[in-house]
Length: 234
Image 1 (cartoon, rainbow, N blue to C red):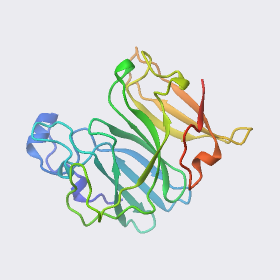
Image 2: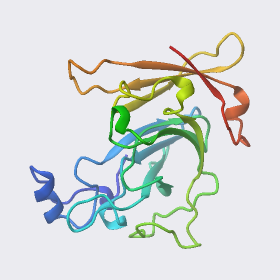
Image 3: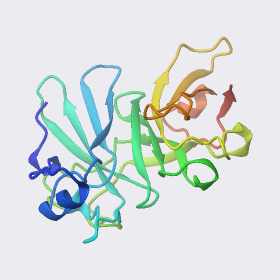
């Protein structure tokens, strides 16, 4: 699938500092496409960046992350033609680490900060819908924060707060990188099985963790605005 030049780093360099100085557009250093989802129909493929592009207010002159508007690239798998839409982060310090398709327009997205243990202050699973999102393919640059009225981002509803004390995941053992999503077979009671996995970066002192959540079908319905739809099964 052809990725538009605006997503690319024109002058790759061996260190983030050198790369920041050499580029005024494209993905931030080590912050490229982090999530990829194929819809159940197989005719739509969506790639989601971890952070905003440089030209979309992603970083300041010192390389600090300051923007919240991430571009997602959506392909028609038959023609290869693409469209783009905006996913807005909760804050500049956060990033996206996975996307999972539910149907043609609705997806689950993992969004988190880069901290672990008690320092972690945001790591959530969002239900998003791209149906009403504006195609921004013809827009060369996005603002750092607020979008103009002509640009509609995806709708976004928190489905799971992984720091909720009810799940007993928060605290010393909270891993830095929650990065994998998959739907398993339906559970006997009709709920959906959601598998969440952790990336330990091959560190021997960081365990590989697999979390299982049971989610009510109503929470994933097209008109859902979930409040507390999940239970954690250790």
